[in-house]
Amino acid sequence: MTASALGRDFRLLWCAAVASRFGDALRTPALALLAAAVTRDPRVIAAVTVAAQVPPLLLGLLGGVYADRWDRRRTMALVDGVRAGVVAALAAAVAADRAGVEVLLVAAFLLAGLGTLFDSASFALLPALVPPAGLTRANGRLQAGTAVAGGFLGAPAAGVLFATAPALPFAVDAVTFAVAAVLVLALAPAPVVAAKAPRGSVWGEVVEGVRWLRGHQTLWRVTLLAAASNLAISGIMAVLVLYALDVLRVPPAGYGLFAAAAILGGVAGALGAGRLAARLGTVPALCAVLAAQTVALTGFALARHPLPGGFALAVFAAGTVVWNILCASYGQRHVPAGLLGRVGAAQRMVGLLTAPVGAMLAGLAAAAYGTVPVTDAAAGTFALVTLAAWRTLRPAARAASRPVGAA
Image (cartoon, rainbow, N blue to C red):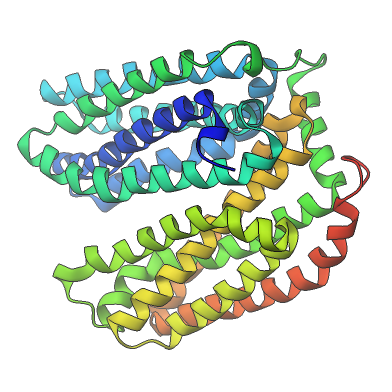
């Protein structure tokens, strides 16, 4: 399927996602720099990070409910409009030198909380814009565009803008949110109106989404496999900089270039996910991706030089992006339209639960034994996840061919 076949509405959504991601890439490091300028207490700086991580766990399922109740196009536009206001107020506070710790905590929490609703609505909106055969290609293009906007454009610009004026990255982020809201509103209303809101309590609707996910054999198994792999991924990310500097001997000045290998790998994976799924089928491709990631992570654990380490990291990152694209596309094809927000939110919730555990365990293990055992354990975890996938997903591929809800 060509890019033009994805349609005008998808191109608008793509532009909105890229603009918003560019702003995120400006705001996130700027927020960390601002926190460090306000206080040198590591507990307070960490609290700002935690304030952005808690809302998806607290509000993720609730966001899925309202993504299914409300018109998804208008919901996304409204959320981006509110986020533009929040970041603009933060920029004004920074410019006036009134951005204390409390302001940073509230801003981080609000933006992350609003993001949970936006993510659920966005996930549920895409199948209304793109035909089923184009979902993998569309998700890949979204991933590639946002990776370039965030990793290659936004992140390097953040430090420059902050050094020019601390309020500047937040002001630009507010503009990107406003632009994204206008682009989403330009989508044609007819194909993106959400299904009629189901009757019942909010909690009852949450349970309905979780039960549907639990009852779909393939999607539930994929969700559990993703949660298990996130345990290893978060562990690797927690010690990546130390492993790169101490074990791979990456020069400090070259760490940004080394980390860019993961972005390059992610872009390559995003662009190739559609071809892989078309050649192998989505479920077999998921198994193949896990096997490739296991090999790459094993190579990363054995590497003692920046070049092989960077190459292994790029391959591993490519696999992570392909996995995410294939999972999203599979769910968007198989979950009923009226449940897409809730089921997607439940999947993200399960995956998020293991991430802080993996990071905490990696930090404790690295402090006691060094970073090499952490990478070894991550590779071993992926080997077990791959074995579980080949044992459970391949038989489930036959069940997935039955009508939705039969599994």
